[in-house]
Image 1 (cartoon, rainbow, N blue to C red):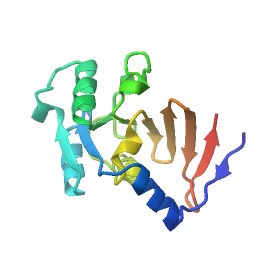
Image 2: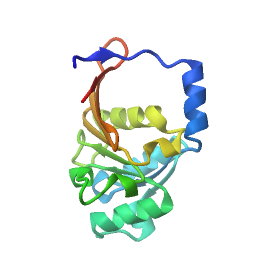
Image 3: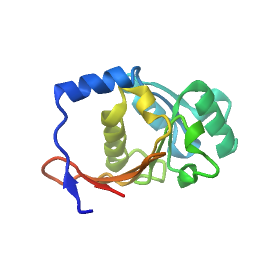
Image 4: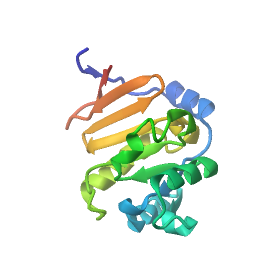
Length: 166
């Protein structure tokens, strides 16, 4: 299937999204993403915790995943291990956002751009994240994996994003 440009969402689309997936997203920022990412999300008005605030410093990815599920928090990480469906199954997934740009843990423009896109997708619609894994390979390329399949998005410099559905 070739890349297909997405239509701009209508007001009705936004209303339906709010109705189907109510609530504002809450985030759990993994150690490798750094405390500044949690502070950035807090600054945008989101309930955001860094792993050390929840007693998870040095804990395994499985423990972080379990706490995120229990507390209904979307995991923000640089760690691609969270994309492993056998270790972290979709049916127990509170939502995962893996951002590869800026993987050094430093604040940079690419990391911020990816966070903004993740929030734009569903920051105001918390339950939309449930069961989904978002992987940003760059600020322009996003893959969303869920039980229903995998969609890839590409943002061009001008115009609406494009989608490729497997």
